[in-house]
Length: 325
Image (cartoon, rainbow, N blue to C red; front, side):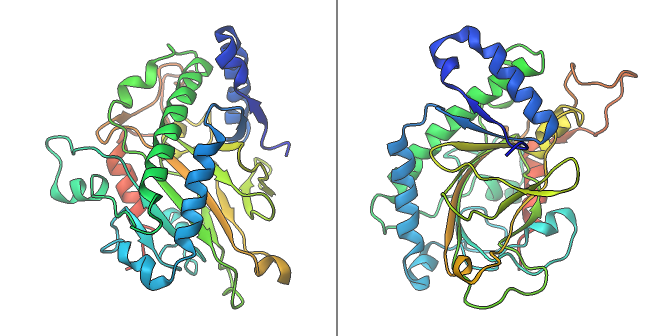
């Protein structure tokens, strides 16, 4: 656990003067591993559990029922995706067997900005595919989405302080964020995985930050630390795992890291007979947000390691590279 520190956010709510100390803890974690966990984060546990239980009930349905809300074509961002429909390692250009998971995703209720193509508008501003069973699924997800969105905005204020920027610096990049929420379900293994096949292949996340709830027990989530060792990440709900995405690494000129992580397959017969679920919120800046080196992060010679990218195009290209036709 030395690679994933646990940070208590409650002092921030009780005393704003505690923000500087919390921001420093976050800075250290973001420079060392790009992962940390937060406790007493302000999201009521009943909101987490409502969404968790609704998601669990959905994945317990028959395949026929789940396919009623399937993503209508390869590359569509929202709805249900069956087992082995995605290979996350492809986002890094690495070939591997498809990931051993199924998932459900939903996005923002937002209108596309002017000037984007039909393909771009369809990608991130597409309609969500809400299941009718469980009956409370949409309500549970929308409430949880909003709570996680608010927490991600609070964390971005702490990120700004940690980077010696005005507290509201990132607000201009998050006026209409295109964030998504996803539940990943890793069913019990009915056969041996193929060589190199994982529940989720090694990848980095694409946006600014990710919030992750995972269940207690054999999670299988691992990160690649600075010593190039794969180490497990064990915090579970109601604590939230926070990790940086590619855009935050680009913003900070590589000072903060978007760390490779994966979900491995269990190596014991008992563990392989157990299913696993996680719930993730991927904060993504506005579609047209321009991501370039922050003024406090330029190299001593005034240079930046990464060229400018826009948030939406970066997300679209990375996501579509992982989808199997």
